[in-house]
Image (cartoon, rainbow, N blue to C red; front, side, top):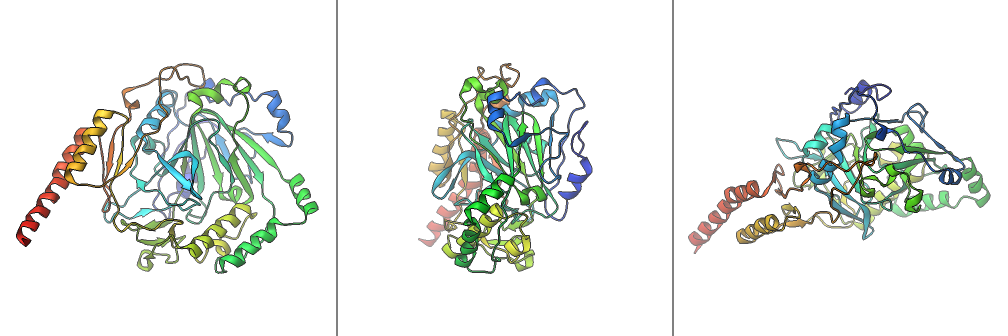
Length: 458
């Protein structure tokens, strides 16, 4: 991995993300002069006054615990002009739910699916159901090789203050976030000290230790709050934030909802129709079998494939034990990973059962004739699918970038229908013609075989 100027040391990230998990990163950056859009927009004086006890940081500053940094101009100038549009259209976005409510962002998980047996990495965090892993899409694979992407649809879409969950993240690696679209500000804040009952304790005992820590004497709590350090890092279009695990362990991070009137925002904060695409890359050390019924690796009970165990789904007590561990990691300063997660967890879905048979997925395109042609053919073949509607947001020529120029809408900026096969290698087929050909060669043959078997039985 190579970067220009004051940007990331190539070797450190490449080395840390290459072993022992299934991730390799190859990102390129241009030597061209930094375009004006890459500079963080000026923050209004009124907002700065409200941020009294915080510091606004740049690439030359020490960020977090010293193992984190912000990098501008990740992509070359020409690529950065169309990267947002291409990602917006090419990524197959899904909605995510936690505690029965919709999370305020669209999400997609992509990664390496083993060509031999279909096994795949899994990153677990508080959500009712883990999302299906998709193969790399072209633009994402150009930026990095392992991505969890989130689409922020307006300034009101946000991530509340938290620490990333490291149950499945390989120790010593970095968490890398690429930001494209409207400028947002990342807030880092030091945590309060807490104590925790280990991962082997009962859920009730774990919860009591968390409650006791949260219920610290009011005066002491106020003293801690006054001593807590806050940092703010503007993340303009085409920037990359690298967070080390020391920072993740000792600081909370989040993007607060932007409640300012539009007139108080600078152009970069309202660019791209207020939308931002955030791509987060993590090095994962926990894996699932192709059918998601077996789990092994760093964050599981069985630490290698020969020790793989059945995934646990919708089990209230086991789910609560994992939620408590996540909760402590969110609150505890520099928590002991072995004490919190060391015994491992085999929980996959917190709230839902694993279906008896996984359905194929169909990501619609917004083109009515295309979507109808494919769905009608699936119905004719008797293939039940999980249908994923496209985002309601649309790109149009009236949207502008951070410089105030109209967005370049290329042919690639049109959403393509996608069929994802269930089980096996989870093959993905893109485009109406290719999907219909695939269905004819695969599912039509299966139907003919079933009909022939039925005639023989009769």
